[in-house]
Image (cartoon, rainbow over all chains, first blue to last red; front, side):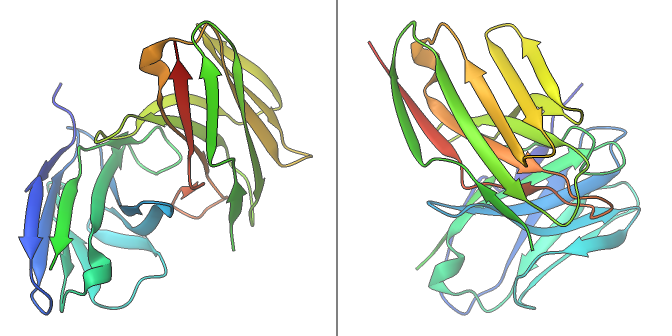
Length: 113
Length: 110
């Protein structure tokens, strides 16, 4: 079956703009988690969704938001982009919770100039 | 908060063995994962430990000691393709997230 897909794969934005990233989980998976990955920082947890509900949120400013749709697809939005938001944004899906095995998408590489 | 430590870098020779340690201090514990991530690619699942002891899967083994807050990933018969970053991640209880260490970059040399 198809893996986790993320669109777009690459994105270049300027400071102050906003961006929306999309994630389609593996069919049947209902838990979707988002992570930010930067060199030296590892994967930093952004938020997790299940059945359209955010169950947990990491320590990121309110500029970072997300949502999940009834088909389990998820989006995350970053408003008023800053240079420090340049990173690889990874989405991971699992059956019902992150404690199940997580499958990662290829990520969206965001560059803010 | 969650604190997960692993070495930043390790180098080993093709055919050798490397052990990557991970120590953790978390608000709860409901399992520990190891992931492999090649440069420019997504992390892929390697192993999962929830009970103390050694789990062996081919050339890779993972060990857990819950009382010590300690795990290691053992890579045997190293191959060039094993050059990658290895991520330790803990699932704290009832937290709906995984907490990741910063990753260990393993370089395999001929």
